[in-house]
Length: 140
Image (cartoon, rainbow, N blue to C red; front, top):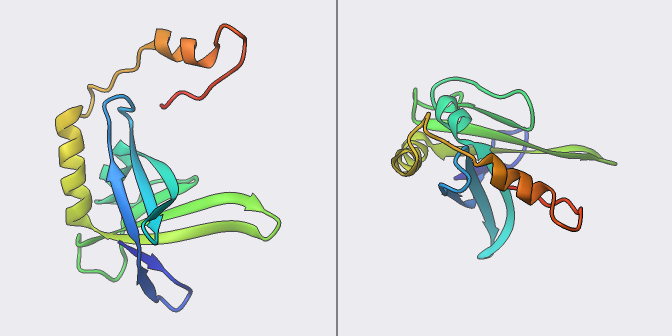
């Protein structure tokens, strides 16, 4: 994967990994590494990732589209927007080989085929409201 380094179109290599589990059936997790250590993680919508390889999708914090300027269908552009802060809103623009993304998606679809994703609402509610009344995150 490559990270855009500025307005001049420069790019630098970036170590990242896509992963998928049936326990979080609607999402793919993209983990970024710096000097071998995990730097950050983003959860991406699995369907949006698949569609973004073919056409522009997304309006919020994640936008995915075929890379402009690349040979048709060879690269996918992933734009991630961070939380707004005092200096404005950070963003990162990444470029990955479409073949790598589609190979990952094929393996994810083998685990849980599109349209067969399920979440147990009882488990969701149990995670959201524990016995002590505290809330806790649930991976959806």
